[in-house]
Image (cartoon, rainbow, N blue to C red; front, side):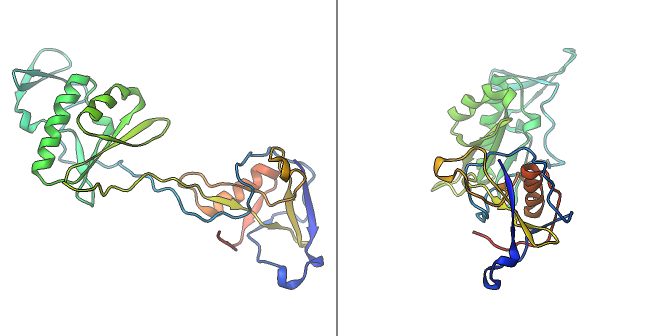
Length: 259
């Protein structure tokens, strides 16, 4: 990959655009940083994509029925066996519900950190939880299963849950309670790309060549580009991508275009 500068004074005023980022030095150093390989060769991206569903908060009144305790189902009723094995407390299946909170849309978000570790206990309490939530008129159920508890996935699917999306650390399942079509939002399917239009005090524009690209783009000069990280601000991503691709520090000025 190479980088080059063009003199803006040779460009007509009608074709000059406002700067997105400005270099912090008067000239571009000859050192080149590593190049991040991107799948698309465009300067500006503007399709907003990803809304991550947060389930960080939990209800203060959620039933503390899992963790170090172990569940057993005996003749249709349930018992909690304490970690020390010394005592057990029988309780009604009607009160055995997964630790969860209600979202603002009348749905249920299960706390992934408070899931039963035993698959048989999970199957029993999941069934009773769905029965309770149906009686209460709840709508969608969001069940996030961590990777280390992937053995619970087929149990949830057998009880009617469907795949929503998966990440490296978890899989998200959903269950729509009311009759009729499911109204839960689909998973995000786009990424946000950004291009940095960087100029220095001499009105020189920073451009680069991709080291790895399709044959038809070999030798083309382009703006430094890349993808915005999850939860990253656009201006932060623009400065970061220019730094990663060229080794040059820049200062964000403004957004000049969306596509």
